[in-house]
Amino acid sequence: MAILGAGFTGLWTAYYLLRREPSLRVVVLESEIAGFGASGRNGAWCNSAFPVSPGELVRRFGVGATRDLLLEMRDAVDEIGRVAGAEGIDAQYFRGGQLRVARGQAQVPAIKDAYESARALGLEEDLRLLDAEETAGRVRITGAKGALYNPHCATIHPARLARGLARAVERLGGEIFEQTTVTDFEAGPGPRLVTDVGEVRARTVVLAGEAYLARLRKLRRQVLPIYSLIVLTEPLSEERWAEIGWEGRECVASNRYTVDYLSRTADGRILFGGRGAPYHYGSRIRDEYDRHDPTHEMLRRTARAWFPALEGTRFTHAWGGPLAIPRDWMPTMSYDPASGVATARGYTGQGVATANLSGQTLADLTLGRDTTVARLPTVNHETRAWEPEPLRWLGARYVQRGLMKVDDRAERTGEPPTGKTLSERLGSH
Ligand SMILES: Cc1cc2nc3c(=O)[nH]c(=O)nc-3n(C[C@H](O)[C@H](O)[C@H](O)COP(=O)(O)OP(=O)(O)OC[C@H]3O[C@@H](n4cnc5c(N)ncnc54)[C@H](O)[C@@H]3O)c2cc1C
Image 1 (cartoon, rainbow, N blue to C red):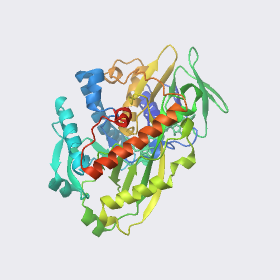
Image 2: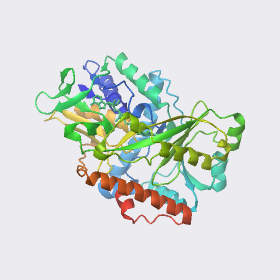
Image 3: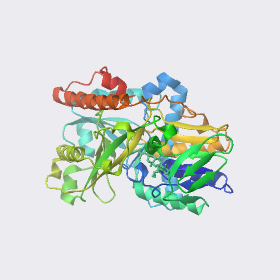
Image 4: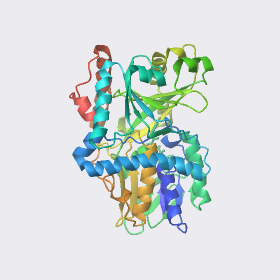
């Protein structure tokens, strides 16, 4: 097996292949270093949420398939903790659950709807709707009117997990070649990965490069690279933590379309992430796009608005990276024996647990095992390509700006979004 990409998708695939068939030869080609991509620098959320909403999943695949998928996502959260423990990976895995906070009255219907969607699938048992006071008992956020608590979520240290997993793969006999860029791949009899220094032939090639896959000519329009950005505070003093609370270290987000995600790190910092950086024409990905001053400044401002206790606190780090959005927001985990090509991609920024599920799924598919994960609706899912430029750029920017306006309007007026604007219909699923 030859795998493109040593992020969570490539590494989990290698890991499960080697666990299931220790005699396999597994080679991973990585253009930078293992964990260089989103896997090594994400917002630390390891959660069971899936990129497509439960309601939309039911509409597309029915209740049974949706339940199976969401239960596998919950298992993936546990599985990551289990493997980290078993392999001695010090990934700072902490199972604190998740709080989806209604920040402002306009967001209250969204958390109630999320609870009702889970109830419709019989998955609400351990979810809890919290009122404003109960929410403040966990974490004090300005304007919080309530929250939906979901225990199926942990925080991880992304880089430690990625590097530890790479070492686990090597211990099992996998070979990781860093600084080796795949420039093309060939499907068909004798599939192969073409690199700048030679070719690797294998029975199966696995394409696990998420947003970066848009750089390969044959996959250019399969995913839309969108940047997510993060700021990090210095470690906070005991007094500031006493003001904020958050002893449970839940992952925290609000319900903005433009997305925010927060975590409390093991060393006592606040990580505040969000979208908002503009899409780059031609799906371009460049290291300098990892920073976007206006967006980073907006994130620092927003963090201070959420937590007035941060007044005077330094923000010590700012970074970002590209995530991948497929045209229908549905990740795929696919394998075609005829072409010898397997791939998993399109996590829309919710890839930590999903990539683990991908690894299990691709291992089972390529080894011909008929398991529950090998029958999920993600398997061999096909998404249509994004529009060519300049339509892609026009559409992406229109939706990005439109969703910002919808969020701002909801906050200003206290009225929940209607869900009916063009940006909402195009930009959420
Ligand atoms: C800033 C940010 C915050 C995020 N926060 C969260 C979060 O909190 N929770 C969550 O669930 N998800 C989050 N995500 C998404 C999540 O991190 C990703 O979906 C997931 O890590 C993707 O894993 P991957 O292995 O598929 O891709 P990546 O981690 O991007 O790995 C792809 C690897 O392939 C390599 N590569 C690319 N092209 C080539 C090539 N041609 N040849 C060789 N190697 C190549 C890259 O260098 C990279 O190492 C976030 C993403 C970003 C960018």
